[in-house]
Length: 305
Image (cartoon, rainbow, N blue to C red):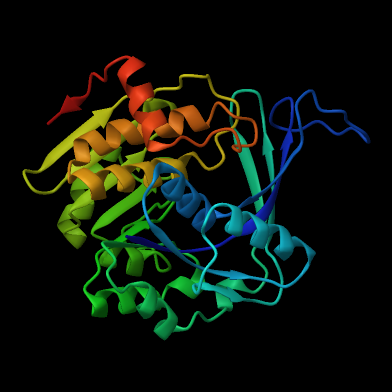
C-alpha cells in the first residue's frame, strides 16, 4: 500500500508553435487544447493506481464546479476515499507546450500552500502502508512528521531544486528515503549532486530526472551512481507530468521488487511513453502494458561508477 499526499487541480494545456510566444489576437492551434484533472499529487496517485499499486490518496478538493470534475476523476480512478477532504476553491493551471515538448506551467494554487490537512486523518491512511509519497505542497509539510512517527518511509520529489540548503525543500530532503528531483537547476552535474545528497542527508535512493538525457540513479548501499538513457517510444509531444510519471513508475516497481535498477529502467520507459501524448490522458500504462513495452524496447546501456 502506498499513501500519496498532494495537490489535485484542473489543467488547461495549450499548444504553441515555439518559445518565445509571438503575439496574435486569435489562434487556432494545430493540436487539441486539453482540459484535464492534474496536479502533482493526482499525477503520482493516478499513475500508481493505473499500474496496479494499491493507493490511498490525501488531497483537498473544493465543492465548486471545477471540484466536481476533480471528484469525478478521483472516483473513476479509484482514488476517492477518506483522505479526500474539502477546501475552499479548486486550484488550476495553464500549460503552454511546443512541438519539441518544452513547456511553461503557470499554476494558481489558491489556498493550498497555507491549508491544513488533519494529521490524524493522514495517520489513519498510513495504517499498513509500505511507503508515503509526500509531495512538496505546503499542507503536506507537517505530514512528514506523521509518517516518521508511524515508521513509514517517505518518498519526496523536490522538483527543480538548486541547493541542499533550500529553505523550503530541505525538510523534505531530510525526511526522504527515496528522493527525486530535476536536473534543470542543479549547481553541479547530477552524478555529483547524488553524492552531495548522500553526504548531507544520507538518503538511500536518489533519482535525478534529466529530460532527454534520461536519469541518474544513486543507490547509497554500495555507493552506485548510474546514468540510464531516455526512451521515447512515441516521440515527444508534451513533457508536462514526466517527472511525476517517472517517480510513480519507479516507486511502483521498487516497492514490488526491491530492485531500484529495474525500477529506474521501467520508470524511464513509462515516462517516455507518457510524453508522447498531447494531454497525457492517453499516456497511462498498466503494469502489463509496461512489461510488454519493456520486452519490445531497446535494452538500456547504462554507465555505472
